Length: 157
Image (cartoon, rainbow, N blue to C red; front, side):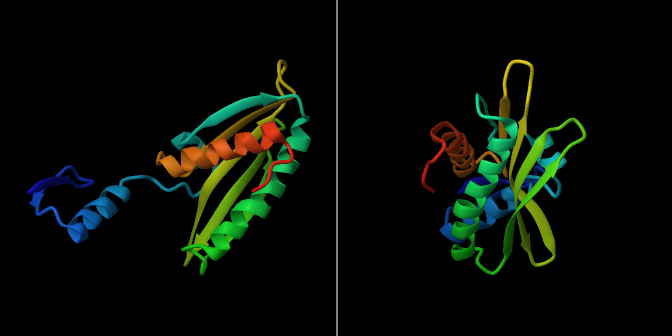
């Protein structure tokens, strides 16, 4: 018998079978707050990667938007969540920070899967911070992929 900890820290004994382990994983997965706004995603601080590049902040934001549209939207529209809406959202904050977000709507729920912030600093023409939906390996890899797009500039999906 394996122990499974639920969101409210109750411990119960469960036989170690795939369906029950899956149920335990889903319960634990429910503990993570899914970001419904870019500010929530930033506050969660998951799968964070950052870099400085010599490209202009405006060029970087536009390039990342294009790459997200080419690479992420296409893969999500044909993948396991193909019946949901996925799109790239952009905004500019009062301080000039440009945000590029990968957003998904499943049923009536809108949530943010990836957030990229680009801003000019005194030391850096384009300081880039990438956030992922959670701390699982695939979102760290997705964040690293955005950094690689910028480093290689004309990278393939």
